[in-house]
Image 1 (cartoon, helix red, strand yellow):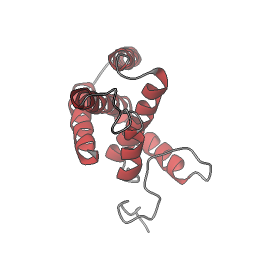
Image 2 (cartoon, rainbow, N blue to C red):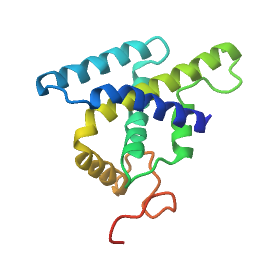
Image 3 (cartoon, one colour):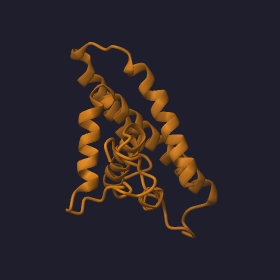
Length: 161
């Protein structure tokens, strides 16, 4: 499921971000991003409560940073755990297999859409966006980031090191 979720999220991010990456008047940029977030929140509301939506958006931020920034990489185990917490417990008698599959598909769609919105919002300011992600990853304070620690073999080397 983790690989499928990451693939779906990355695919959706690219599809959603492509039109926005074209030149856009500055006056409409904020409005479009705000409208996209409103739409996504409404789309998620039937399947996720407010706290779950916030957790999914946090996962999407981490996913976007891991996809867009060479300096950080998402820890698949952390991402999988964060997303699994948004689903009913395995074996929950109140949830049929069909409902579980629907919820998993909805979760992937929502993660991909949120990742795409983050990508679109930050495409023209990647140095700042990525620096914030690195700071989050390297923070000594617990912050629930979903990144691999610096120095892990999956994280690309920084120039000059």
